[in-house]
Image (cartoon, each protein chain N blue to C red):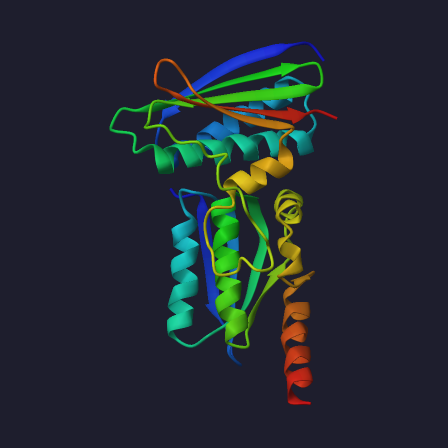
Length: 137
Length: 123
């Protein structure tokens, strides 16, 4: 597979998530990524983006940037927002059987099941940056 | 356009049946949540949810099912899922939620599931 890169920027609003999923799916198909890996990549980006929107307290006009790439047998997504510092990798607990009273908060758990790596960084420009890598089989 | 259509029909014998079509995510999960809450307020806790038309579900959507099934099971009910798509199956398998939900291949099987539960409860 040839190396690929692309970038998406969208308004930080949950109403835009479906467009983002469609665009990531389109790119993965163009890059020749199989359907299962595409679904997992889309899911990881969707969860990270929804998390950033929910916790970011982003004002009107705020955007989220997603840089995506394929290198060898690995997909990478870097999701960046300019909200207050929020590290979603803290507090990752989930038990599907005992959790039936809790409706939210499964996003990072789901990402952790899919991703090879998940790394959070508060950048020097006061941005939240979450980088997720997914193996391509 | 929320991307989620809920086509529902209340059936007799305390069973609620509805179909989901589209996608279920952080944008529209509250729409499904309010459907469950509406039936809970009527004392109905047995659901047959046909999700063959649901092409995508995020953790927010799965969370609605997971939260609702707890309330149902506390009230001697359940949520039976009918024919999840390949995409939804993959996500539910990742989360392990098939440990919680009965999954069947058709509405008739879902009705049989509840009838069987009733027979077992009566012993």
